[in-house]
Image (cartoon, rainbow over all chains, first blue to last red; front, side):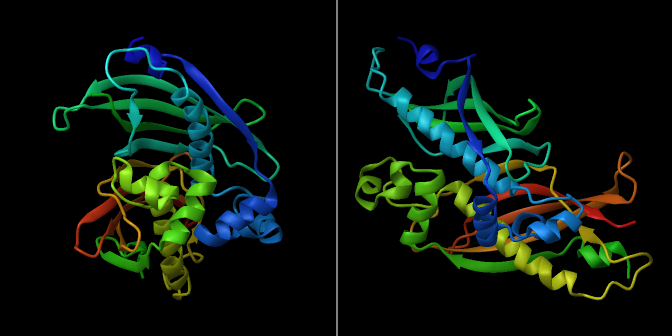
Length: 156
Length: 156
């Protein structure tokens, strides 16, 4: 088994689908993003967005939730390559996050990730940087979020 | 009053300081980012991060919380320029988010933003795109997060 096979390089993996219920949208937004179009149906209808919709931070964090659920499955896969089982570490950050379309209350978003590449980090022996294309699509197939994420993986 | 004055272009604004308590770190992570170093002190100590630390998504969402609290103050400022009071809309996304250093439990992060520029959007008459440099610093002054964010503002 190669790292390419373990990380599923080049494959688009469906992580799961999440229905954004109004109460959940408002609960997240009251804590972190209390703009009128995220916390109040009536005010949202009169706002520039025309209705209650999820905070973009909420959509992004929900991608992470489903990404991790899927990763737990992968980590349960027996690593048969050389060296110890790869261990996922922190993320150094990501690029080009785009919130392409509002996610209105009641909408279901299907999240995916596509592992793009991995490379050893010169400054951190034994660690690789794995890059991913991360996406979410609504029930009409329109993309609502995308970003290029990265994660450090201990492979040595 | 010009839009540059209203948006405080070129000024770095301190948004507030937030202490990341262990219970809050775990509560966020259980919902959105249940990796061992975010949800369990004991397992975190044995992990690659060496201790319980906040999910990067939690740090980013907390920047948003303080950003909005400060913006509410600005929106209360009487707009004396031509046209109606500018109205903040959604964000199209952001670039180059970097989680530069773990935020361990008990750490206090001071969040800032610096308005960089604004420009009319050719495709959306009456709307400007405001770009911001967003940052967070720990109690030793080290930067823990930075990203280049943007927000649509109705100015027409």
